[in-house]
Length: 437
Image (tube, rainbow, N blue to C red; front, side, top):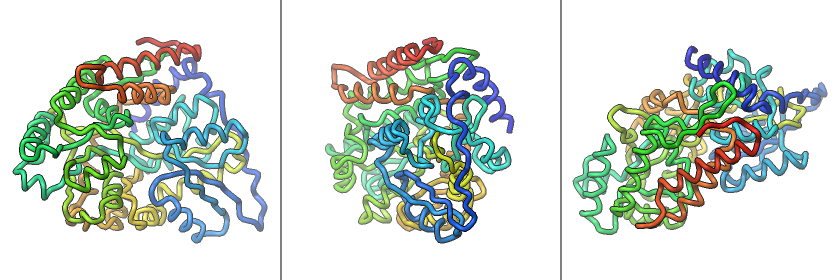
């Protein structure tokens, strides 16, 4: 896979010096749980939909490993803090869910083990190259990718028809559609800007071709003032200033309520959003459809979220943990167990398992639409040049804080992005890393 080798080689050179801890931390956990007549006890923390169903199915499928699952809050809602605190206290679970955006920070803090000796090149070849890229840092493999999360636009097809609004394919069309929705119903909006969720904005910058973090030689280059980011920032500021989108926290009672009463008729999300809507609004079955993400001229997608499974630094059961992680990510039984739960619309990083996911997911909620064919096209269009830096927590916390201060005529999206940029540069500098930006 030329794509993976090219970027990995660049990051290898860069992170040896710019992120020395990546290649020095974590690493030794030997599998000491090899008692011949007893199953290996394994602990796993996560929050993705269907996780308990997957654990139950795995435990029932064999007797060699016994997994104990604990559901924790989603990463940015407290899950990552819980994992970090457990690692520091020396009582972390063996395996944890970590989104791609947060993986470099956990690696750089020494919280994880390199799993390259268990998760081989042959194993990685089964997976979407872009997902493998995001779990390969400093030339080492740090997690088993589970899903890709290409962007998608969910919309109320009944209300689009009622208001005679065409489904937008470009961002220019999206703005025109937003104006038409507001004109048809003064309370209705085409979508929502999430002030608590920088990752949705970052995915849109990614889609536009931005590259905020770049490791080059021994230096991290941070650039949030590139043309792509500037374009996305100005576009969304314009939508907010014209009151063409709602501004509510993601998955909040206000957001959910607006979906229920039809005052929000679209959702700019990702592949996993299909399961979210289905579980949140069961009474609206048959009213929703899925379209490709609006684009800037050429169909493209960023990645919004996406889960990987990583082994914590003190686990002595790396082999068993990776075996379980691979079962979840790369086997038909693992994917079936998760999606059959009815709560997950995961788009597997394992390309051969996409037909399995499509078969198991009940698409009647979307009128029988082949949403996995749409995810397939979007997944193939994910820009492979985006990389996450080692201070995503600092970046996103800062942007989130400033998103919350956005007011008409006051601080805007550009101010929030600049604050995130400055905080990122300051944190990298504080850690003694070379940085430009």
